[in-house]
Length: 169
Image: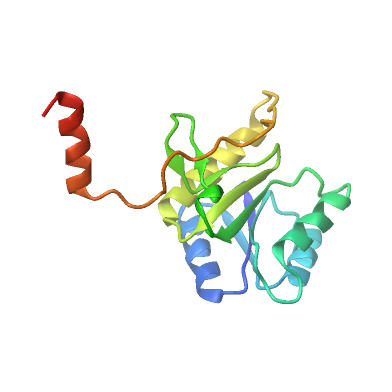
């Protein structure tokens, strides 16, 4: 039986983009377009994961998340909070020390920053489910690592310069 994912965003084209890509990856997708609808869908649909936009009218993502965490039935429900990047502090380091626009904030909470590549989102969703299925305990770091450089796309020329420096040109 496929995992069920609730996608919540007030921008319908973003919801559709995420929905189409998750369905291609063989997940069952339920959608909501505001926070109140999201809480109702969590109760009726019982999703395995929620992808939640942080900025929505009336009830924003943090209020929805707070409500989910107060409810004993949804306290452990994994949530990917999607937000627009405001500054470099929103970046994460992956396991290889590279800067990324997504990461783990706690045992059941994750962050993803818009704009995003749908293929990377699918990989991240798979990793979230793998994290939830693993029996390893996860310790939340005391302070997230500070990014070392802005996460701007690296041009081919800049990449070649880096390689040349490494080999001594």
